[in-house]
Length: 468
Image (cartoon, rainbow, N blue to C red):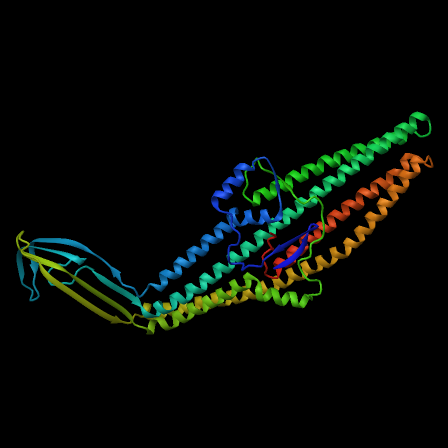
C-alpha cells in the first residue's frame, strides 16, 4: 500500500497490473449509478476512474480487441486438429460411362453412404472425409508464434489506451476542481468589488469622494460579476467534458467533492530525469507493443523462408455404411472404411512468389524497427517535457503562495485605511485586482502542477493511481 496527498486529503491506493481490470463497476451498478444520479452529481477522483474503467467506449473497444486476438491465437493452435464431418449421400447415374480400358458402357446404378463422411461414389474415396487434416507443417509451427506476438501487441496497445484514458479522466477531474476553485475566487472578488462600490458611493454621497471614483468602482463590480458568470459557465463545460469521458447521460451535472486545490505528489522529487526515462523505456506499454510487432515480423520472415521446404500433409479417414446396385436398387449397406495419407512439397510460382514475400516481410520488419526507434524518441521527449513542467510549476507554487500572501496583506491594509478614514475607497481597487489575480495564478499553478504530475506518472508507464 502507498499513500499520497490528494487535494488536501490523505488517501491510499494499490498499484495493480495495467493489463488487469481493477475495481470494475458491474453493469447493474453502472445503470443504477446513471439512473439514481441524473441531475446534480458530486464526484471524486476515485469514482471517476472507476467509471472510466467500466463505461468508457475506448477501453471497452480495447478489451474486445484483446478478446479477438486471443481467439485468433487459439485458432492457430488448433491447426493440427483434424476436421470432423458426419453425413449421408445418395448417388444415381443413368447413361454412358467410360471404363478404364476406354470402352463406353451404358449404365444405370445407385449408391448410398452414411456415417463419418459423405459423398462416396463407386470406387473413389468419400468427397467429404469423416476426419480430415490438410496443413503445411511450417504454418502449424509459425502461425501460433506470430499470433502470440500479435496478442501481446494488442494487449500492450490496450494497456496504452487504458493508461491514456485514465490520464485524460484524471486531468479532466483536476481541471474541474481548478475551475470550481476559480468560481470561489470569482465569488470572493465580486463580494469585494461590491463592497468597494458601496464604499465609493457612500464617500461620494457625503462629499468625501468623487462620483467618478464611484463609477470606476461600479465598472469593476460589473466586470467581476461578468467574470463570475463566465467562470460558472466554464465549470459547467468542464463537468460536461468529464461526463463525456465517463459516458454519463446529458442530464448529469458533475461537481467535484474536493472544494480546494492542493498539490499532489505522485513522483518522488529525488528521482532523476535519467532514472525516469529508463523506467519509461522499460515499462511503457507502447514499448512492449513495438517489441511484439518486431517479433511478429521476424516470425513471419522465418515462416516464408522455411515454408517451401517443410512438407504439407493431407490425412483423411472415413467410416460408414455403403450400399448400391443396378438401377434404383441401393442393396444392403455394408461397413466401409477409407484411409488416405499424402505428403507433398509446394513451391508457389516456382518459388518466385515466396522470394518476393520474404522481401515484403523484411520491409515490414524494417518498418517496425524504425517505428520503435521513433517511439523511443517520442517517449523520451514526453518524459522530459512532463518532468520540466513539474519542476517549473513546483517552483511557481512557492511564488504563487507568496503572491497571495502579499496581495491578501495589501488588501487588508488598504481596507483598514478606508475604515479609519485615512484614504479614499478607490485606493482599494488595485489591491482588489491584485488579490484576485494572485489567487487565480495560485489556482492555475497548482492545477497545472497536479496535471503535470499525472502526465509524468503516465509517461513512465504507470496507470494513474486509483485512490480508495
